[in-house]
Image (cartoon, rainbow, N blue to C red):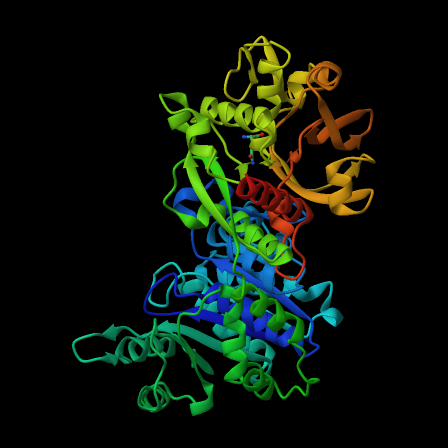
Length: 545
Ligand code: GLN
């Protein structure tokens, strides 16, 4: 039987439960334990796939094609936990399942209610996480989204209260992550909101075993510790100080110093091997010591929300570690290139250009101009998903002279649909519209930049898109535009182009998939790594002239 850790949040949202859960996962793995990770989100959307990333943050995709909350990205970057459809549950998903069962008559005429039917469904999802691989999981960490006191999270909290009763006291542990505000006038960290939050939790019947206190720039002092211990009814060593720490990968080391893993293991009565965080600590040290910088422009929508491209931002941090160089990723507004600004005037200052994923037609023409600039000026270029589609359109327009080339996503009636739905390409009427989601095999072509980066013939990368490279244009693009197909996916009689490159260009590589989802600080993603490497060479060459 696996043990269960439930992580709740108090006082404010965005208190850092996701990073905390991921850090705990890493610490437990470093003690030789196998960890499973799960996030429960109290919103009504069935999954975050339909949510605006500029409000909600990026949609993280798993190998099996689940569109999930970005916290799963933290789990992926910190731990080895296998993430799947089972790893993210929402209120919408729970209700959906319960209503379907009700329609099928599975409740045998009973009145269907929040307790026990919704809570039973939640508990069954927690069990499902570890059911197949029960023997493979020592500890399951379940993060409950939202803040204690919210109406939405009540059924989840009630379910985990019951869960502990079902499986037994020693099998579960509750960790509450809260915020201690700092009042400058009195120079103090205040514990009262935490006391209230824990009281709200206790009203529901949950007594936290460990309290993690976010405390901004300030460290928790003995006075606050004693207060929290007394009022919140926890042991002194069960109070963890979580002051702000950068980079994010250094956070687990702070928890380690405070014996978090030891405290959890003691609660469970688990004797585990000595820790091995050597590799992780060395990575953090390397990251903290980076001196040189390289500048990458990400041409897209002007965005205020850093979380909208969380995994891409992190993949560049990882690529920086691999190359011994800090990567400064700067967002550059694509739409300015549609007006009076020449791409050269802005992009000349950068060592490489990225065009990332996206939906809809805003800024598309500006992005096409940015690709023309990097192609003609031989600046390192990486394209992700929409970024590859833009590159294909640019080549078709400017190298094949197909001035109206476009994607049917932006111009449904285009006479030159170089990017289009598979159903449109194959003349099938009733197919398209659905997304290609999750991991697909890609066979890499010998002699390409992609093959060199990955160092292997076959890779699996994750997808999230509807539109595809149109093979009707492949031969002309290869013969007349210098396009090199770097990798393909073969599906029955059809070959899909997954990676494109350019002949006679130092580094121009774009994939239809999302390589950022598999990048971790200990295993930087090969395309990001080599792109940054190429950018560093450009930087050095520019400095030499
Ligand atoms: N909008 C494009 C498509 O659906 C690209 C999607 C993406 O970049 N993830 O094909």
